[in-house]
Length: 209
Image (cartoon, rainbow, N blue to C red; front, side):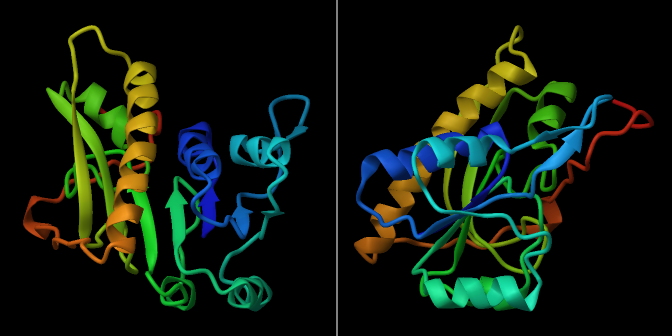
């Protein structure tokens, strides 16, 4: 497996794969270190921090579309690429590279809230439930066929942080279940109904709730 992810939400899935020990983690791909804040201090991603502690090999391409990075992936010959909140769209060359494709853990019940901020929108819009979906990635924005879902009820006092912490754990568990189904050749993909799709774009100051 090659794992691709960046923020804290992705760490639980990476940790679950690492601790389960059933799968060989060939490499962890995460966003480059960036200067942040007033002091422009160079910060690493949460996924990189975990990977270094766990002695996992880390790759930080500026652009995953670069021929150099694609060649690196091709040399690794992964059976599966697992993607969790990575932060870059994957080109067809990467999507078609692994034997079992690229699997994405997305923090919504697709096709609802495709896009970058599904947890924020679920809370802001007063949804009664949310969840995680594991899907087979294609070239669209969270449009791929769904392999599994897990639903979570949203209580009235639940914050975005609360929902985030629940979904990152459930997403890790669900991904392991899907990998087990793929190994047993019993995984079943279900196409999304595009007519029911909604989008959760990156939040800006101008967005009205």
